[in-house]
Structures are given as C-alpha cells and as structure tokens.
Length: 122
Image 1: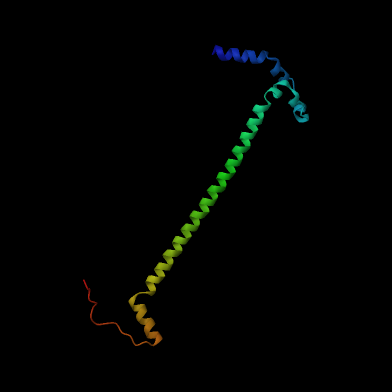
Image 2: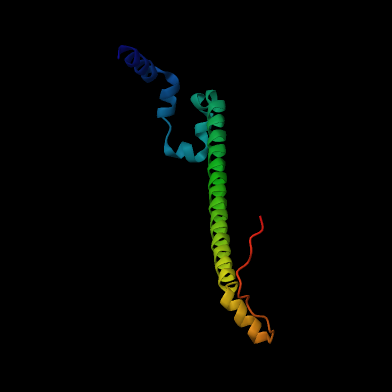
C-alpha cells in the first residue's frame, strides 16, 4: 500500500497535474487545454487512444453487419429447405399409382395396369 501511496503523493505535488487542475471548462471549449504541458507531453498517447477507439468502433460495426448477413443467409436456406420439402411432397402426391391412372383416363389413353406382378431379375 505504501508504494501506491507514494505515487499518489508525488502526483499531487506535481506541477504538471496542478496546471491541469487549474484549467476550467472554458479552457476545454476554447482549446486552451491543448497548450498545457501535461497534454503536450501525452499527445502521442492520446492520439493512440483515439485511433484505437476508432478502429474498435469500426470493427464492431463490421461484425454486426456480418452477423446480420449470416442471419439473412440462414433464413434464405431455411426458406429453400421448406420449399424443397413442399415440392417433393407434391411430387409424391402426383406420382401415386391412382393419380397416374386417373390422368391416363382423362387423356383418353387406353393403358391399364398389369395383372401380374413385376419379376425381379437377379
């Protein structure tokens, strides 16, 4: 604890921080805060933090856009799956033997089903 206490005491006695403490809200609005010694010494650190925060925000927007795109693709895949199931069910319904016989009779074709079962050739 004494190590941190020494650091805090040194910071309180520092002239650089007392210069910052004496600044007002008007100095921030005018831009005079950038002429203070502490800010001039830490310019590159502040610039680095601003750059990292911009990159972070951009990364978040990009990831949200990718998540939205993947969700839309999943919805499209699910819709295609349901459409495929519907079409295959309709095809199974149409291709039953009774429906084929009814279709042949309605077209006027004189085909009839065989009385003997098919023979399996091995």
